[in-house]
Length: 154
Image 1 (cartoon, rainbow, N blue to C red):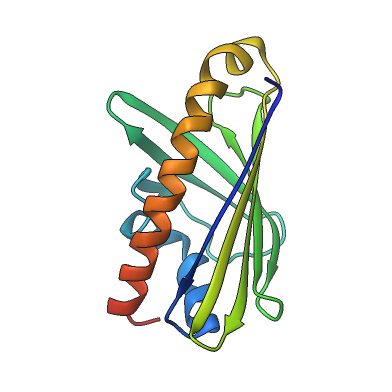
Image 2 (image 1 turned 180 degrees about the vertical axis):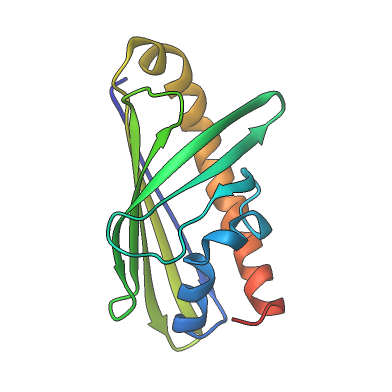
C-alpha cells in the first residue's frame, strides 16, 4: 500500500462563514476533533506556509505529534487545505482538503484525505491501521463539529 484516499461529508445547519471559522480555528481543534488531544504550537495567523503542531491520540496507546502546514486558505471559496507529517521526521504525509458549500438547509461540509506512505514501515504496518481509523475518526469528528458549532459562538 503506497497511498490511502478517503473522503467524508455531511450537512451542518450553520451559516457557511461561521462554520469555516470554526474549522480553521486551530487553537480550538481539540474541542471537536477527538483524535487531537492538544494543540502544542499554533501560528499567530493562518498565512501561506503557517504551521501548527498537535498531539494526536486517536486510539488507546497510540500517541504522536503531527505538524501541519497551510497550503490554501480561501474564505471566499470556503476552501482550507494543509499538509500533515509526523513530527518524527518520517517523509510520509497526508494532504487534507476541506470544502464548504452553502445549502438551503445549512452548509455541506466535505473533507478529503490523501495519505502518501513513503517508508516500508508505514506501507506495511501503520498504513493499513490508519486507513481503518481515518474513516471512523473523520465521521466522529464531523458529528462533533456539528454539535460544537451549534453551541459555540464564532
